Structure formats: structure tokens, C-alpha cells
Image (cartoon, rainbow, N blue to C red):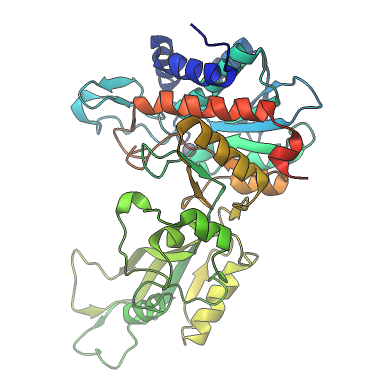
Length: 462
Ligand SMILES: [Zn+2]
């Protein structure tokens, strides 16, 4: 029986109940059954969106399909009252490749499978991002059932190309800017810091990748007959790469290093063990905690590095060397010409002959400040449902098309992730603990409930 004396807990309990019902599992299995690997040429992207549109239609949303840069999108909208706040939701229906044949226990990517012993549900996209979208739909469904309405206006934008860089998303948002006018984004993707720790993140680090090449001559030269008197591009490039950080991994490239960690971000990250605890405490920027290094600082990594043939070395000085370097960065540095900053650094280190390819970020850093009223509102709402403060991350360590929402649409972004670090979302055996669905549905129902009850100033400040 519903307890009508406390409608908020009616909504959160109802959301949990729906998520624990067999019908939820069936609905999730139906989503996973679409092999929506965005990199596959024949992926049923339109069919998936048509299926999702039916689900939103049943919840009183109007749906419309769009195409941008040849990629399909769905917009589901439920406009209740222009005087109420408007929330934009976002989800992606595409997945990483299925990797058939590499899943354990005879599992296949496009069939929901349960491991009764561990309580895990398996399937490609269950964590990233189909299950997360279904959780949020479930929470909205519960609020509508408990209140008779959401209490706010909702748009949900579903794309089918996130895993291949969100082609068309920026263009579509620019084109639909007026139609998508919203007070904030509330969306779910990515991991919680741990399966049992409700988490909010407010943006994402940016990422820029550079290829460094140094070619000295055509063909190797005998290491005995020439060694010691000819430049070795592998050694030169190694020195150049080593100059990117201190011997302990602290970023050293001027223009790539942030000025500091904002106090609110430092306070939010206090006491947090990031990355499931898999960190080297003595690696990275000095004076920062591992959590600050991942969620509030910048890092450069060598992704790949080659010279000669390590599998079959010959007695020769290689003629060329090559490396791929990636910068991950938080908002606060000038990212208008990150390649120029690298160029200036290498020149200053005496490595002017190294050729740099790639000059702009593939993802731009963007984040809503930790002390934004919407961030504090969302954290308080989650705390009210779960009786503990959620972890608030200034930025996800990885990347999301967050800047499209903050910059093109100009709205604050609140991400409430429902996955966890071990979910294997881009590997075989993608899964979630089944218990996370009910937990997350309850949290989201509470958040939607509170947004539907809030005065706009509570949510957005004055
Ligand atoms: Zn995702």
C-alpha cells in the first residue's frame, strides 16, 4: 500500500519497487537486445530510438526524431507548466562493440544474463548507458504516478553516437537551442566512485591527443659502426617525453598546468579514495591527494611509444621514433592552443626538431562549479533519500560531451551516475550489480520529486 502521508517516500519506494519488478528486467533485456554498437555499419540505431520513443510516449512525453551529420537523435518532451523549471535529460543508446566470443560463462553481449551467485546482470550497454537511462525513466514514471505530474518540464535527448565522439550532437543542440532551453541538465552516465557510494559529478575533464614524431634519416645505422656519433631519435624522444613531467609524474608543461584547486573542489574531495583505491600515492602533482589529481588537476600520459622493433631488435640505431601523448585537463587553463604550449615547451627543452601533430582537444573540459546552487540542491536531495551525503566530484576523470550542455546551451550540469568502476563497460562481461538499479531509481525519484517541488531560486540561486 502506498503511504499517502509522505508522498516523497511514496515516490522513492515506488521507483525502487518498479526497478525490482520482473517487468523492469524485461524492459532492460529489450534494450540490450538491440546490437547498437555505434562502430558497426548496420547497427539498428533507428529501431532502438523508435523503441525508446514508445516508452517515453507511454509516460506522456511527445517524441520527435532528428538527424544531424547523418546521425539519428530522439527528443522526448513533457511540457507541464511554463512557470515551472525545465530539466534537460540526456542518454546514449549506442554501445561499445559487442566483443562476441570473449564473454565468460557462455554469455553473449546482446542477451541479458544473470549470475545468481553474485547478483550481477550482464549485457552490453547495461551500464553504459541503457540501464542508466531506464533507471531515470523509471524514476520519472514513479514521480508521475505518485504526484500526478513531474512538477517540472522535461526534455530527454537520446543520441546514438557517444562512443564514437557524439557526431552531430553539438550541431543539433545549436540548432535546437531555443527548443532545448532548460534550467539545468540532469543526466546519468559513467561510474559512481564505488557501487555503494551515491555520486554526483559536475562536468568532465577535457582530452587532447598529440602525436610526436622525430625522424633523423632513412634507414637504421649499425650501432657499432655509428653508435655514439649519430643522433638516436629514440633517445632524443625519450628525453623530450621525460620532460613532460617530473620524475614523479607531476606535469611540467607551462600552459598545461592549472593554477590551483578551488577550495570548494578541495572540500568536496576531502577524504575520498578515487579509482577504487588503485593509485600510487607518490605519483603525480605534489601536495595534492590522489582524488584531487584525478578530479581537479591535469595529467599527461604517454599512450604509445615506439622506435625500432622491440620484438625483433637489430643492431642498429633506429631512424625514427614516435609517441602518442594525451593531456587530460580540468577547466581553468587556456585550451585555445594546447599544441602551441607543447611546441613552446619542447623548443625550450631543445627538442625543436620533434614534429607535433594534433593541436586541439577532442573533448573540451567543462564543469559546473561545486558551489553552484543546483549542485548543492542535488547533493542535498540524494542525501535526503539515502541518509548519507553523496560524493561530489568536480569533474569526471574521463570524458563526456558535457561542454555541449554548458557552452552551447549554457546550463549547469548535474550528472548522477548509476554504474560503478568495475562494470567493464568497454570490455567483455559488462555488468552491474542488480541491487544498484533499485537504489539508483529511488535516488533519482527523490531528486525529480524535489525538483518538482522546488522554487526556481532554490534550484538555481537568485
Ligand atoms: Zn556512456
